Amino acid sequence: MPQSLSYVLVHLVFSTKDRRPLIHDSIRMEMHAYLASVLSSSENMCVRVGGVSDHVHVALFLARTESVSRVVERLKVASSKWIKTKGPEFAKFSWQRGYAAFSVGLGDRAALVRYIDGQAVHHQRRDFQAEMRAMFAKYDVGFDERFVWD
Image (cartoon, rainbow, N blue to C red; front, side, top):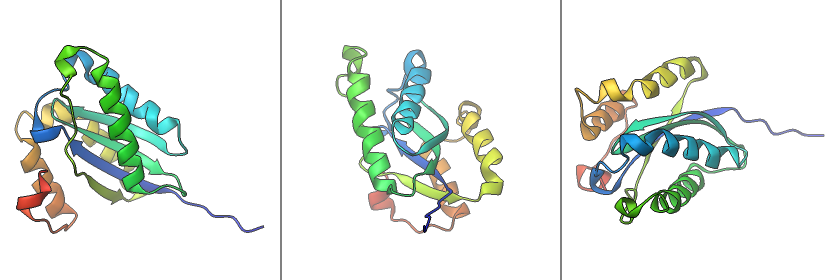
């Protein structure tokens, strides 16, 4: 019987709308755990979720039957609904329309996890846009400044 196998490590990054710092310290860990649970409820395997007040990084093994866009949609929709139940200060919470997704070599998994775990320290020196520009350069991704921050 034929078997389809897939073991694709993906690094997702997406921010809050207009990069508003709405993922407060008081809720950040719970938000990350919730995003991981959304992934776990599908065939995707969460490796790590992290980030700071205005964006998240998600490392996951993509299920062979999934598309990146569908995973991102599910994460954003579920977490937007979830955070709005956490108090009136989150009533206008929303994610940016876009996202970035990068394939990562399996040998770089530990480095990716360290990178995600180091977000708080990393963002003492660099904002979201500078971080993304560096990632685009690292992965040789062309982008248009007029549209990428939406």
